[in-house]
Image 1 (cartoon, helix red, strand yellow):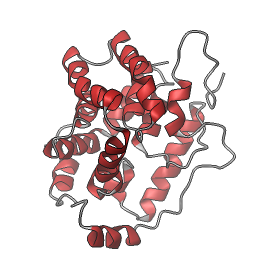
Image 2 (cartoon, rainbow, N blue to C red):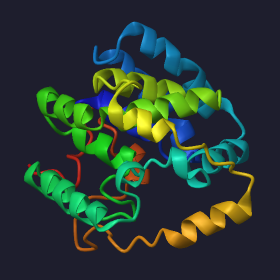
Image 3 (cartoon, rainbow, N blue to C red):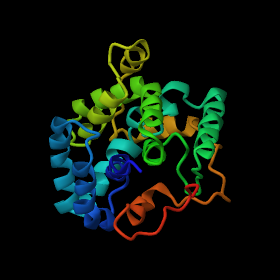
Image 4 (tube, rainbow, N blue to C red):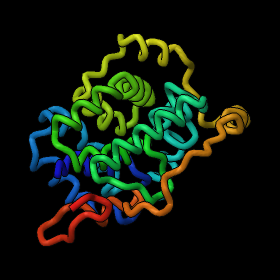
Length: 234
């Protein structure tokens, strides 16, 4: 179990009281492994401090503005390269099969390409497998990093660390094309409504699968004497 990826998944999840209470454990999980360089661990401190001590309503509002009302910052990775084309559905199926082959099943409302879901899956895999999948997503991670840095948000630190692990670079051909797109204005509700009305997502995780929703990650963070993680092959 690579607890760092579970911790990063939690940091990118919707802020909740449970998340705030779990921040000491999340900090310990990141510090106890050497997955991230010390500079990246230090870079995460402002975000972890905000999540631990900030006003929950304000944290939730910021999260929604960033990730739910900004299509160019969507945490659904295939949104950036496939939009709502049929290719996205095929890519979803392939990713879902990768999860199942690794003993990981989805049951929550998030799509397979949701970054916190991917990170939770990576936490269950050998580092070599995790690294390969991050490299596959490297260009998208680099683009999200650049856009979050532009917004001057502490969430950028999570993507900075992931982009390095995935060897993501903004001069990649895919990244250059994506960064040529204008950033969304989360306060332009009319424009956002028009964008999302065109985005008809019909693919969803198997409702009979056994893994809890990603936003319940915190109840499954590995601690001494904790039960085995649901949804992972034993």
